[in-house]
Length: 107
Image (cartoon, rainbow, N blue to C red; front, side):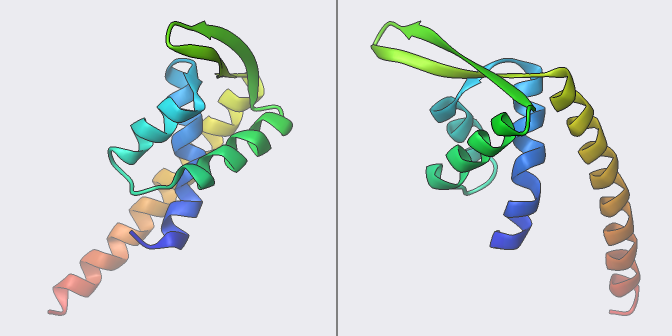
C-alpha cells in the first residue's frame, strides 16, 4: 500500500481500535498489521503524539511474561477526534469511489 495512504489512515485506525478497548503498543501494531503493512517504528511515534494531544491516557499493567506493559486508553477528546475523522473518511471515500466509478465507466 502507498506510504501516503497509510500515513493518512493510521491515526484513524489507532483511535478506532483503542476506542473499542485498551491496547498496549505491540498489540496495536500486530492488530493493524493484520490488515495494513506497517512497521512498529511508525506506530509508536503516532501513539506518543496522540497521547501528547490528549487523545489517549496511558497506564502500566503487569504482564505475566515480562515487564509491565504501557496501555493506551482513549479519552473523551479522543472519541471526539475519532468521530470527526470517521466523518471525514466517509466523505472522502464516497467522493473517491464516485470518481473511480466514473473512470471505470470510460474503460
